[in-house]
Picture 1: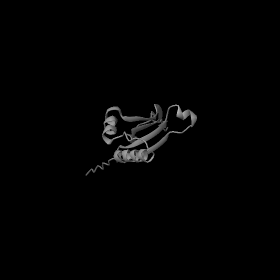
Picture 2 (picture 1 turned 180 degrees about the vertical axis):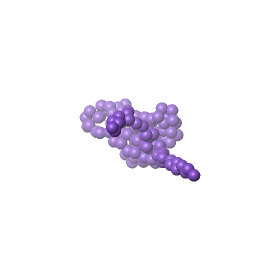
Picture 3 (picture 1 turned 120 degrees about the vertical axis):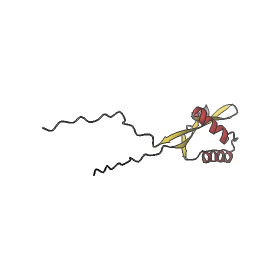
Picture 4 (picture 1 turned 120 degrees about the horizontal axis):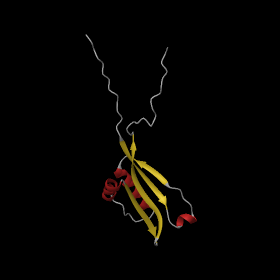
Length: 118
């Protein structure tokens, strides 16, 4: 009797996180240099809640809604909104999806050649 054992290779599920970047732009950035700030979230609703809370605490108008971000991510794979004061752009908020656990590739590495044993 021949018994074959078939094993399956466990696959990693591809998951997405949301990267929120606050990018300083405009002429005010030349006066006082600031670095881009990145934050990562696993839930889009939590991303929007964090952004709207921080904007409200710092006195900025809240022009960001869940539906506008969701639609923009579906159509363009990113959401971008510029914030300005007196016609001068101060910073840009950019939300993008990032892939975790992408499909495994060979990374362009070929199979190692081997020498035949004599």
